[in-house]
Image 1 (tube, rainbow, N blue to C red):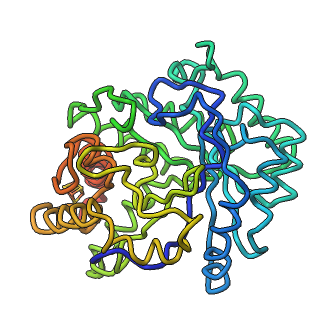
Image 2: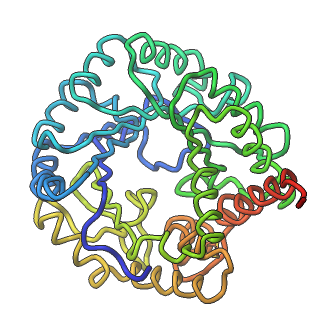
Length: 368
Ligand code: SF4
């Protein structure tokens, strides 16, 4: 894997900066302001996306703020320029989902991923703008999805990865009825400056326990664990080198104003005296395909990040599994892009793989 692909596999779009919640660990800087994406931005993005989608599977991920806070009418106007072959996804806190939203999501064939951190007591960080727990509203939204027969994924943030926590988490999501579960250990990013260093043995045991819980009842696709197992199998088969993509997916994030940040949605809306506003261009003046194809050459911090990826390649035994981590984690933890290890990669790559291998060792069948 070297450099950045000129064609992404999906685009992240910010229909509004506004979020109706105010979660304690949120990284978004402008979530109290309702800056909506003009339809002209979506029309400009759609010119490139429709061409990419004609050549193969392609997704648009609507990610805010809270994307549903843009309202049905506006979201429909933003979706309208995209062709029928484009898959739409929404990452939502679910608190606004009711029957009318379910009908909208079904009519526009939007796939839903809900942010919820586990049982009620684990959602203390997810609060309304008035500081009240959001859990009941999240669960009401999920109930509406289920009533309408809409499948959904879930994304959980864990800020205390330790043994005992993982089995509880997995059992909760089995009951919630999601099809896919992603588990994020809280990251220090954007305006969230809370520490994310954890004791290595605890994190490792958390992941090992999560694998055990999943293996007992693997009804949910468990994103991190399934990827780890695929990697472990490829190592055993001797073809792990072919697992990572040949080039990094640029993952362009199109902000509400049309500015484009590649590689890490979390960098959108920030600026730095050394790196400027991190953007690689604006779709209102330059076609998205051109911005993405030129990002590696034209955006200073991207070159620095790629130097960091090369440093990872030569120094880290986990590189084949990880691929060099995320730009935003390096920037927000190390203050630059060409470092290597971060707390994030320790928590979510290194300890994850170690935990999966610990589980395998514990459950191996003795040789006959
Ligand atoms: S685990 Fe960390 S140090 Fe290793 S390749 Fe990934 S980002 Fe780089």
